[in-house]
Image (cartoon, rainbow, N blue to C red; front, side, top):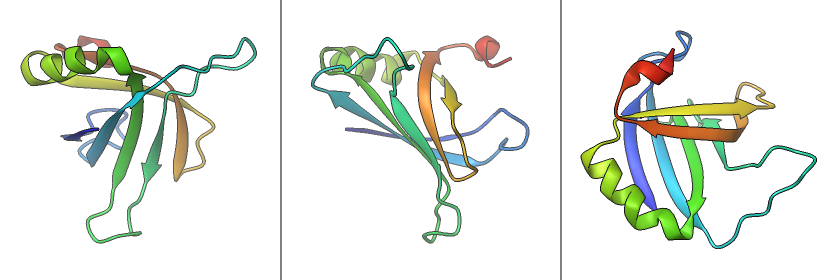
Length: 106
C-alpha cells in the first residue's frame, strides 16, 4: 500500500483542504457491463478523529505497482478524482488520473 499526503486544489468548496490518498493493488478486476467500475472511495472524516479530513482509497492493477511508485516519485504531481453517489461524507470513485501538469484540473 502506498500512502500519499496532499492538498486539494479544486473544486473551490474543497480547495486548500488536506487529503490523504492510499493506493492499493488489486489481485483481479471485476468489471460489469451495466455499471461503472468502482475503483476507490473518497471519505470526509473531518471531526471523526483528531486531524481527520479527506481520505481516498484508489485501487490499481497489481502489475502496475512498480511503475506507479516510480512515477509518483519522479513525475506525477496532480491527481484528478471522479466520483458518483456522494452523500457529503462518502463518494464512490469511478475514475482517477495522475498528471505532471495541472492543466487537466480545469
